[in-house]
Image (cartoon, rainbow, N blue to C red):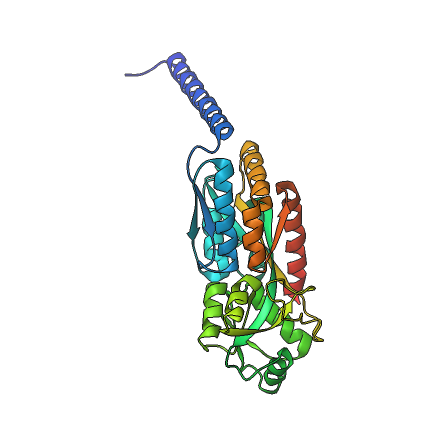
Length: 323
Protein backbone atom coordinates (compact mmCIF):
# COMPACT_ATOMS: atom_id res chain seq x y z
CA UNK A 1 0.00 0.00 0.00
CA UNK A 2 1.34 3.39 -1.00
CA UNK A 3 1.24 6.03 1.75
CA UNK A 4 0.69 9.72 1.12
CA UNK A 5 3.38 12.25 1.93
CA UNK A 6 1.16 13.55 4.75
CA UNK A 7 0.84 10.07 6.29
CA UNK A 8 4.58 9.48 6.04
CA UNK A 9 5.32 12.84 7.67
CA UNK A 10 2.88 12.07 10.47
CA UNK A 11 4.52 8.71 11.14
CA UNK A 12 7.96 10.33 11.23
CA UNK A 13 6.69 12.96 13.66
CA UNK A 14 5.18 10.30 15.91
CA UNK A 15 8.43 8.30 15.86
CA UNK A 16 10.45 11.40 16.69
CA UNK A 17 8.13 12.30 19.56
CA UNK A 18 8.25 8.74 20.87
CA UNK A 19 12.06 8.79 20.71
CA UNK A 20 12.15 12.16 22.52
CA UNK A 21 9.82 10.90 25.23
CA UNK A 22 11.96 7.78 25.68
CA UNK A 23 15.09 9.89 25.96
CA UNK A 24 13.46 12.19 28.49
CA UNK A 25 12.20 9.20 30.44
CA UNK A 26 15.68 7.65 30.38
CA UNK A 27 17.28 10.90 31.49
CA UNK A 28 14.73 11.22 34.28
CA UNK A 29 15.40 7.63 35.29
CA UNK A 30 19.16 8.24 35.32
CA UNK A 31 18.70 11.39 37.42
CA UNK A 32 16.50 9.53 39.89
CA UNK A 33 19.02 6.67 40.04
CA UNK A 34 21.80 9.16 40.78
CA UNK A 35 19.74 10.83 43.48
CA UNK A 36 19.12 7.46 45.17
CA UNK A 37 22.73 6.27 44.81
CA UNK A 38 23.85 3.78 45.94
CA UNK A 39 21.13 1.14 45.82
CA UNK A 40 23.28 -1.87 44.93
CA UNK A 41 26.67 -3.38 45.78
CA UNK A 42 29.80 -1.62 44.52
CA UNK A 43 32.83 -3.32 42.94
CA UNK A 44 36.25 -1.88 43.80
CA UNK A 45 38.92 -2.95 41.28
CA UNK A 46 42.50 -3.31 42.53
CA UNK A 47 45.01 -3.66 39.65
CA UNK A 48 47.47 -5.77 41.68
CA UNK A 49 47.58 -9.07 43.55
CA UNK A 50 46.13 -9.40 47.03
CA UNK A 51 48.49 -8.74 49.92
CA UNK A 52 50.32 -5.64 48.70
CA UNK A 53 50.10 -2.01 49.77
CA UNK A 54 47.44 -1.17 47.16
CA UNK A 55 45.28 -4.12 48.17
CA UNK A 56 45.60 -3.31 51.88
CA UNK A 57 44.58 0.31 51.40
CA UNK A 58 41.69 -0.62 49.10
CA UNK A 59 40.27 -3.32 51.37
CA UNK A 60 40.57 -1.15 54.47
CA UNK A 61 38.89 1.74 52.67
CA UNK A 62 36.14 -0.53 51.31
CA UNK A 63 35.25 -1.76 54.80
CA UNK A 64 34.91 1.80 56.07
CA UNK A 65 32.95 3.02 53.04
CA UNK A 66 30.39 0.27 53.62
CA UNK A 67 29.53 1.91 56.94
CA UNK A 68 28.75 5.20 55.18
CA UNK A 69 27.12 3.95 51.98
CA UNK A 70 25.15 1.08 53.58
CA UNK A 71 25.96 -1.30 50.69
CA UNK A 72 28.71 -3.87 50.19
CA UNK A 73 31.94 -2.70 48.56
CA UNK A 74 33.48 -5.80 47.02
CA UNK A 75 37.21 -5.78 46.17
CA UNK A 76 38.29 -7.54 42.96
CA UNK A 77 41.97 -8.02 42.05
CA UNK A 78 42.46 -7.71 38.27
CA UNK A 79 46.19 -8.05 37.69
CA UNK A 80 48.73 -7.82 34.90
CA UNK A 81 50.74 -5.33 32.87
CA UNK A 82 52.07 -3.31 35.83
CA UNK A 83 48.47 -2.44 36.72
CA UNK A 84 47.35 -1.68 33.15
CA UNK A 85 44.95 -4.64 32.96
CA UNK A 86 42.93 -3.52 35.97
CA UNK A 87 43.05 0.14 34.97
CA UNK A 88 41.88 -0.66 31.43
CA UNK A 89 39.05 -2.76 32.83
CA UNK A 90 37.98 0.12 35.03
CA UNK A 91 38.07 2.65 32.18
CA UNK A 92 35.78 0.41 30.13
CA UNK A 93 33.17 0.03 32.88
CA UNK A 94 29.88 1.94 33.11
CA UNK A 95 30.21 5.39 34.65
CA UNK A 96 27.41 4.83 37.14
CA UNK A 97 29.31 4.64 40.44
CA UNK A 98 28.98 0.88 40.81
CA UNK A 99 32.49 0.09 39.54
CA UNK A 100 35.28 1.99 41.27
CA UNK A 101 39.01 1.45 41.32
CA UNK A 102 42.12 1.86 43.39
CA UNK A 103 44.24 4.22 41.30
CA UNK A 104 47.99 3.90 41.96
CA UNK A 105 50.70 6.36 40.89
CA UNK A 106 51.19 4.15 37.81
CA UNK A 107 47.96 5.70 36.48
CA UNK A 108 50.01 8.72 35.39
CA UNK A 109 53.14 6.72 34.48
CA UNK A 110 52.02 3.92 32.18
CA UNK A 111 50.93 6.13 29.30
CA UNK A 112 54.48 7.48 29.06
CA UNK A 113 55.79 3.92 28.77
CA UNK A 114 53.79 2.58 25.87
CA UNK A 115 50.68 1.35 27.71
CA UNK A 116 47.22 2.46 26.57
CA UNK A 117 46.38 4.21 29.84
CA UNK A 118 45.10 7.79 29.78
CA UNK A 119 44.65 9.60 33.13
CA UNK A 120 41.81 11.58 31.57
CA UNK A 121 39.77 8.39 31.18
CA UNK A 122 38.86 8.53 34.88
CA UNK A 123 37.10 10.65 37.44
CA UNK A 124 39.07 10.94 40.69
CA UNK A 125 37.23 10.73 43.99
CA UNK A 126 39.95 11.49 46.53
CA UNK A 127 43.46 10.53 47.60
CA UNK A 128 43.60 7.88 50.32
CA UNK A 129 47.25 6.98 50.98
CA UNK A 130 50.91 7.84 50.48
CA UNK A 131 53.40 4.94 50.21
CA UNK A 132 57.13 5.42 51.00
CA UNK A 133 59.57 3.16 49.12
CA UNK A 134 62.03 0.74 50.70
CA UNK A 135 64.85 -1.46 49.44
CA UNK A 136 65.46 -4.83 51.11
CA UNK A 137 67.53 -8.00 50.67
CA UNK A 138 66.95 -11.63 51.71
CA UNK A 139 67.74 -12.36 55.36
CA UNK A 140 70.85 -14.37 54.44
CA UNK A 141 72.12 -11.85 51.90
CA UNK A 142 75.84 -11.02 52.02
CA UNK A 143 74.93 -7.34 51.57
CA UNK A 144 74.64 -5.82 55.02
CA UNK A 145 74.22 -2.19 53.99
CA UNK A 146 72.78 -0.25 51.07
CA UNK A 147 76.30 0.80 50.10
CA UNK A 148 77.37 -2.87 50.01
CA UNK A 149 74.60 -3.57 47.50
CA UNK A 150 75.38 -0.49 45.41
CA UNK A 151 79.10 -1.31 45.32
CA UNK A 152 78.40 -4.87 44.16
CA UNK A 153 75.95 -3.64 41.48
CA UNK A 154 78.57 -1.15 40.27
CA UNK A 155 81.34 -3.71 40.08
CA UNK A 156 79.09 -6.34 38.47
CA UNK A 157 76.68 -4.50 36.15
CA UNK A 158 73.28 -6.07 35.41
CA UNK A 159 73.93 -9.15 37.52
CA UNK A 160 72.24 -8.20 40.80
CA UNK A 161 68.46 -8.60 40.43
CA UNK A 162 65.85 -6.39 42.11
CA UNK A 163 62.19 -7.43 42.09
CA UNK A 164 59.40 -4.87 41.74
CA UNK A 165 55.63 -4.72 41.25
CA UNK A 166 55.78 -4.67 37.45
CA UNK A 167 57.58 -3.23 34.45
CA UNK A 168 56.72 0.45 34.35
CA UNK A 169 55.65 0.52 38.00
CA UNK A 170 56.73 3.14 40.53
CA UNK A 171 59.08 0.64 42.16
CA UNK A 172 60.66 -0.04 38.77
CA UNK A 173 61.13 3.72 38.41
CA UNK A 174 62.73 3.86 41.86
CA UNK A 175 65.24 1.21 40.77
CA UNK A 176 66.11 3.36 37.76
CA UNK A 177 66.46 6.44 39.95
CA UNK A 178 68.75 4.56 42.33
CA UNK A 179 70.94 3.43 39.45
CA UNK A 180 71.13 6.96 38.07
CA UNK A 181 71.98 8.48 41.44
CA UNK A 182 74.75 6.00 42.26
CA UNK A 183 76.13 4.75 38.96
CA UNK A 184 75.09 1.22 39.89
CA UNK A 185 73.44 -1.21 37.46
CA UNK A 186 70.80 -3.08 39.45
CA UNK A 187 68.69 -5.29 37.17
CA UNK A 188 64.91 -4.87 37.65
CA UNK A 189 62.73 -8.01 37.66
CA UNK A 190 58.95 -7.41 37.35
CA UNK A 191 56.18 -9.24 39.24
CA UNK A 192 52.41 -8.68 39.32
CA UNK A 193 52.35 -6.64 42.51
CA UNK A 194 54.45 -5.79 45.55
CA UNK A 195 53.48 -8.87 47.57
CA UNK A 196 54.86 -11.43 45.05
CA UNK A 197 57.93 -9.23 44.56
CA UNK A 198 58.65 -9.40 48.30
CA UNK A 199 57.94 -13.15 48.33
CA UNK A 200 60.60 -13.55 45.63
CA UNK A 201 63.13 -11.81 47.88
CA UNK A 202 62.14 -13.91 50.90
CA UNK A 203 62.71 -17.03 48.81
CA UNK A 204 66.07 -15.86 47.51
CA UNK A 205 64.90 -15.70 43.89
CA UNK A 206 66.31 -12.18 43.61
CA UNK A 207 69.13 -10.26 45.25
CA UNK A 208 66.89 -7.43 46.47
CA UNK A 209 63.41 -5.97 46.28
CA UNK A 210 62.08 -2.43 46.03
CA UNK A 211 58.55 -2.12 47.40
CA UNK A 212 56.39 -0.06 49.73
CA UNK A 213 56.92 0.03 53.48
CA UNK A 214 53.74 -1.94 54.17
CA UNK A 215 54.98 -4.70 51.87
CA UNK A 216 58.41 -5.07 53.51
CA UNK A 217 58.05 -4.01 57.16
CA UNK A 218 56.44 -7.18 58.54
CA UNK A 219 58.85 -9.50 56.71
CA UNK A 220 61.69 -7.35 58.08
CA UNK A 221 60.36 -7.67 61.63
CA UNK A 222 59.97 -11.44 61.13
CA UNK A 223 63.58 -11.77 60.01
CA UNK A 224 62.65 -12.95 56.50
CA UNK A 225 64.25 -9.98 54.74
CA UNK A 226 66.46 -7.09 55.80
CA UNK A 227 65.38 -3.57 54.82
CA UNK A 228 68.50 -1.58 53.99
CA UNK A 229 66.92 1.87 53.61
CA UNK A 230 63.72 3.86 53.34
CA UNK A 231 63.75 5.82 50.07
CA UNK A 232 61.84 8.80 51.42
CA UNK A 233 62.51 12.17 53.02
CA UNK A 234 61.64 10.88 56.49
CA UNK A 235 62.09 7.55 58.32
CA UNK A 236 59.12 5.19 58.48
CA UNK A 237 57.39 4.62 61.81
CA UNK A 238 56.99 0.93 60.93
CA UNK A 239 60.79 0.58 60.52
CA UNK A 240 62.28 2.50 63.45
CA UNK A 241 65.69 0.82 63.04
CA UNK A 242 66.08 1.71 59.36
CA UNK A 243 67.59 4.96 58.07
CA UNK A 244 66.62 6.83 54.93
CA UNK A 245 68.80 6.59 51.83
CA UNK A 246 69.48 10.32 52.22
CA UNK A 247 70.80 9.74 55.73
CA UNK A 248 73.09 7.10 54.21
CA UNK A 249 74.43 9.53 51.63
CA UNK A 250 72.31 8.50 48.65
CA UNK A 251 69.93 11.25 47.53
CA UNK A 252 66.93 9.25 46.32
CA UNK A 253 63.40 9.90 47.56
CA UNK A 254 60.43 8.48 45.63
CA UNK A 255 57.22 6.80 46.57
CA UNK A 256 53.73 5.88 45.54
CA UNK A 257 50.25 7.15 46.24
CA UNK A 258 46.76 5.75 45.98
CA UNK A 259 43.48 7.35 44.97
CA UNK A 260 39.90 6.21 44.55
CA UNK A 261 38.69 6.60 40.98
CA UNK A 262 35.99 5.64 38.50
CA UNK A 263 35.36 5.73 34.75
CA UNK A 264 35.06 9.32 33.52
CA UNK A 265 31.56 10.72 33.29
CA UNK A 266 30.13 10.05 36.75
CA UNK A 267 27.03 12.10 37.57
CA UNK A 268 27.83 14.98 39.92
CA UNK A 269 25.42 13.60 42.53
CA UNK A 270 27.37 10.34 42.62
CA UNK A 271 30.73 12.15 42.88
CA UNK A 272 29.42 14.13 45.85
CA UNK A 273 28.31 10.96 47.66
CA UNK A 274 31.62 9.16 47.04
CA UNK A 275 33.72 12.22 47.88
CA UNK A 276 32.08 12.41 51.31
CA UNK A 277 32.37 8.63 51.82
CA UNK A 278 36.09 8.66 51.04
CA UNK A 279 36.73 11.56 53.39
CA UNK A 280 34.90 9.82 56.23
CA UNK A 281 36.68 6.51 55.58
CA UNK A 282 40.20 7.99 55.51
CA UNK A 283 39.50 9.94 58.72
CA UNK A 284 38.20 6.88 60.59
CA UNK A 285 40.24 5.51 63.49
CA UNK A 286 40.22 2.03 61.97
CA UNK A 287 41.62 3.16 58.62
CA UNK A 288 44.27 5.38 60.18
CA UNK A 289 45.33 2.59 62.54
CA UNK A 290 45.68 -0.08 59.83
CA UNK A 291 47.46 2.12 57.31
CA UNK A 292 49.83 3.68 59.86
CA UNK A 293 50.79 0.35 61.43
CA UNK A 294 51.64 -0.93 57.96
CA UNK A 295 54.08 1.98 57.58
CA UNK A 296 52.11 3.96 55.02
CA UNK A 297 50.63 7.41 55.47
CA UNK A 298 46.87 8.10 55.42
CA UNK A 299 46.48 11.04 53.05
CA UNK A 300 43.22 12.65 51.97
CA UNK A 301 42.47 15.09 49.18
CA UNK A 302 38.96 15.97 48.04
CA UNK A 303 37.69 14.84 44.65
CA UNK A 304 38.17 18.33 43.21
CA UNK A 305 41.69 18.66 44.61
CA UNK A 306 42.63 15.20 43.38
CA UNK A 307 41.71 16.02 39.79
CA UNK A 308 44.28 18.83 39.81
CA UNK A 309 46.84 16.69 41.65
CA UNK A 310 46.64 13.99 38.97
CA UNK A 311 47.18 16.56 36.21
CA UNK A 312 50.30 17.86 37.97
CA UNK A 313 51.63 14.34 38.62
CA UNK A 314 51.12 13.34 34.97
CA UNK A 315 53.23 16.31 33.93
CA UNK A 316 55.90 15.53 36.55
CA UNK A 317 56.27 11.88 35.60
CA UNK A 318 56.20 12.77 31.92
CA UNK A 319 59.40 14.73 32.57
CA UNK A 320 60.97 12.05 34.78
CA UNK A 321 60.26 9.20 32.37
CA UNK A 322 61.44 11.20 29.35
CA UNK A 323 64.93 11.49 30.82
